[in-house]
Image (cartoon, rainbow, N blue to C red; front, side, top):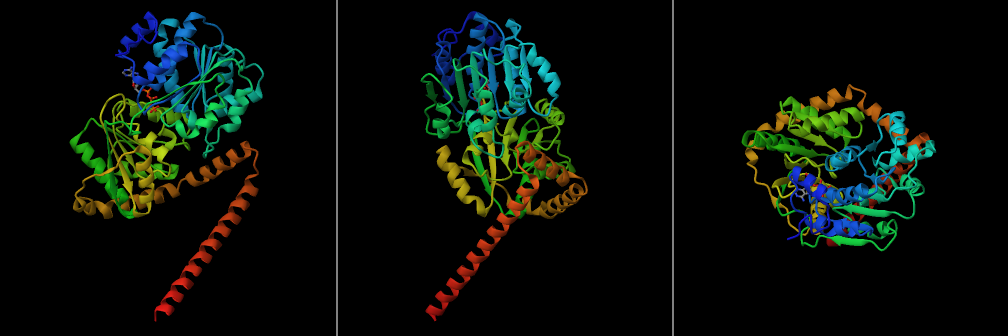
Length: 460
Ligand SMILES: Nc1ncnc2c1ncn2[C@@H]1O[C@H](COP(=O)(O)OP(=O)(O)OP(=O)(O)O)[C@@H](O)[C@H]1O
């Protein structure tokens, strides 16, 4: 069995790991640490909660202690909360070095960040958008001598999703040296492999955990088939059950929109469940504060959008509930990976409507496992159905009375302007597109009707 000595770590780091309760390397650490210490680029693909962060933090710290100078390492990651979490790992493991780190994320003061950057931290952990803003607006940021560029959740950084990082990445890549070590990590690297390989320079060391299943064995993966209208009653029923039977468990509920997040939080609070929320329409300070309250167990239930789907490491999370079935199987892997971390057990329950069955099939194909039905006494759920739906409606009305939608609209327009688009023109385009889609749908339906009529006529 490998040890931290056998993978090449020096004594002070081994000691520091021990102090943190980390005694033996996990497989991703065992394979990737020696390659990184050798000076190779590295791509590591291992399941959620398998210790990928320490797989890059430890060798970087070792190299840094050999030759500490200037900005040594740049880590990019898709979310602000994750940036803080990674910086914490650097700080904890690098304590004996007196490591100086700097976190550059959106939603925080740019001037303070600029000052911190100018003090030459050893490690910069950043979200791409804000770091690119700093690079564009100032020539004092010097990343020309970094030795390591790390892309955590690398596939997310390179995919063109709703938050598209590719332009910001181009800006960042244009100011870092060509001669560097590039390290890419994620639980879902393989489908963006080609794109990722173009970022690494010298033939990277690639390691992927070989195992039939893409999710961890300690995770009990369940589903509940429910009509859309009964979903919330199931949710309240499940939360009540977990509260009654396992008072110390923490639960994350994932949902698809910020508004839904807000409404579900309000609704669960009406039922006196200690609930808190995390989504991208909140002020950044509030996001951090809510996450801290959830981590410290002050609130046991977190309702979040996919902003919390990747990377967050909260050991007390025993249950993940998907209030909506994720459209992308990859998102499912990351969401349910918030529980059953580092060898612990966990349960995930996905609420599935009759329209989502194809999504479940796609998920099962990717994870190479079948979800099992979660047993529920339906009678119990139906008992609370009316009360839950009335409460939800009341919460919707309450939220409509606030400026939530207006804020959302302003945020959307702000984002478009930042992306160099004209919000009015975009709105017009969207309107036209919707009109065309409606027309097509109508045409399809009429054709279908016509066909059915014809078939009936032929039968008679
Ligand atoms: N060798 C080890 N032994 C025991 N625990 C470890 C070891 N390495 C890391 N851990 C712990 O395992 C937990 C999960 O690690 P980490 O957050 O790095 O997972 P990950 O692989 O990056 O997951 P994700 O894909 O969800 O981001 C952390 O709490 C970390 O402290």
